[in-house]
Image 1 (tube, rainbow, N blue to C red):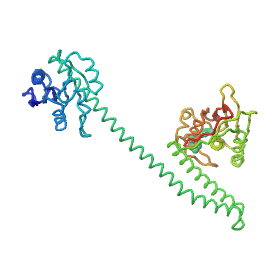
Image 2 (tube, rainbow, N blue to C red; image 1 turned 90 degrees about the horizontal axis):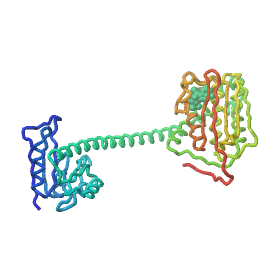
Image 3 (cartoon, rainbow, N blue to C red; image 1 turned 180 degrees about the vertical axis):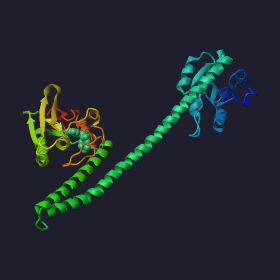
Image 4 (cartoon, rainbow, N blue to C red; image 1 turned 60 degrees about the horizontal axis):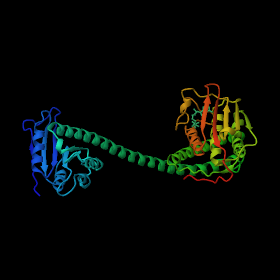
Length: 412
Ligand code: ADP
């Protein structure tokens, strides 16, 4: 089959158009008359300079596309070696090259051909029987514009993918870093704590009250560092959705008793009044008790931390039967939270300025984020109400187990 190659600028005087561009068009048609017609139509255009390369079959068109860049391809629906619609699929270009916008030309009005063309990835289709100089140029200009937009979107998408991959790998790196630092620090820290505790207990000889007080500060600091590392590692595990929930049927009474007991020395140290109100009987819940203890300990710990000596904390557990949930609230008479900060306190690392506590020190701003994640993984909700200078109430719900046949679940 003959391959006609017309490689000449159709408007010799104009190297640049009003837009400053020469539009390179590849015409793929085995009919030399139609190739000439296209060339003639496009040379008439006043505003745009078209540079037309014409070939007579698909194979030659593929070669042209590999060797050179085109802004648009006009391709006949039926070619001697392939269908115009198969052209795009068969085009193997370097990754750096974009497939040019393609207009499939059909013989008749050819609706089926047109639909097939668009499905095959063509930008547009034109009926040869009604094409004019104007409609041809317009179709090419539209296709080129669409092609440019598509290229820009593709480029943006690729850049986003690369950025996303980089972020993901940075994130993994940070997680590994936290975990290994935590491990490297916590092991010697636990040993240091153990030695201090031995001295505190008088194992290494008599200790005065004054020395005991100092040693106690050292023990508290060890516990604080360890708890910060726990929070950091917990947060990275939550990010990676690697936190484990081992849910079983259980009741909250035990959870509350354990939390309250673990807070008793901090409560005494600040001379706080801690009241517990538990509605009985409470329904059974489908919970991971250790995780719920983690949430309640965090809320109680904060209440102790942000309440001045002599203040009051109330833990209230009630059954909201209509909503099938149990609600756990921790109310304190502490410093409260400014209105502007309240919507953000569950955000990671968020801390209200100038808060902190001489007894318990400042935290990392992760506790509430972890608490929220745990509550959400239980299918509950968590929220806070507060007024600056007038205390805060943190509350969360846990769904009541639907049946005693609920089985334990694991999220890994
Ligand atoms: P942190 O470890 O800093 O306490 P959290 O995530 O537990 O981190 O809390 C975030 C911030 O919310 C705290 O820094 C504090 O400013 C505020 N906050 C939390 N609980 C209370 C409370 N009961 N009273 C006042 N402010 C609170």
